[in-house]
Length: 415
Image 1 (cartoon, helix red, strand yellow):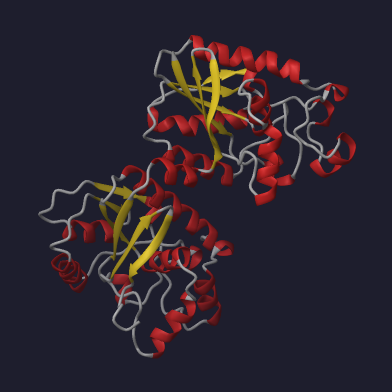
Image 2 (tube, rainbow, N blue to C red):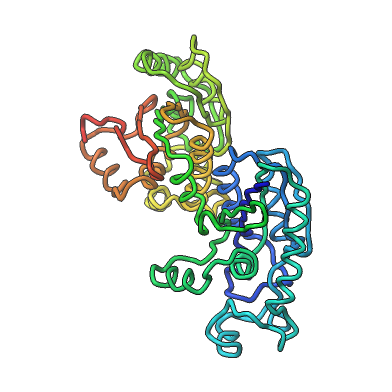
């Protein structure tokens, strides 16, 4: 009998960020931890999990719920999967604990603080994995969501793996031992346990298990009423003008010979209407997604002729409208990375995907994919009376070997 286990560490928490001990105690997932769990869930969406078991600590349970969504599973909570017990040191700062408890954080005996020993940990971890094996059938793949030190100690107690050699190797390369939302794969076969793949990130998993090239064609929506009125148009919306409809038709003609396997479209009506024109006569599945919406400009939304104000230009260049109730650069990049990776993970090798979105989103993608000075590029274009992101402008890029690469920018001939 053979069972494959995918062990995933929970997402990043408040205590992780603060550098504090976190064993049997708990702290909530940060937004970064939630985003990381979603990314790993997307990377693992094609793995045929038969079941999921999670530590009963809420940080692991919340992570497991996100990982299970693509598979229609509900995690089974197990107290025996909770983190290695650090006793009275739980909640302490790691820098203080290292001075008190020794230099090696993943040590074998915390009993002097009322915590686990290797023997007590082995008893409960053996119980947990014995239960999982008994509940599995030959060929099953099981998802396990637990903790970082738990995985490190499991290397010794269950997997007969040289933990200390692994730690030395990681330390020498600056690599985390078990990253938040990291994946470790091991097997049980006829009584023998074995690590088949050391801990890795979601992106490393993609490169190793699902190598592919996916092409993207990005089209900005056609001209809108607010565009003609020089109004700020982010999450607010206005309809396509007659010229905007004509522009979308021009883009459709330009892309007539391009095959698309699917389309991801901003949920704003101006982009949905543009996409409908682009795809007229083509049988292409369309996914409408708010993560492709324009940057939210907060209280500047709908305002007219504001780009003569140096403060507005600065905010636009820095993508920071957070103090006005809008978004900042980090928030925009996170949602764009999330939707792009979901598109990649759903795609097959060689697929071609249409994206229909917005102007500032185009500039954000350039920032994410290159070391280009986007602001200087915009200024240089304006100095030559060229708008670098015209309505119905077309931008192409591709994903391969874990990275996104620019193929052709809008108004490529000028650059």
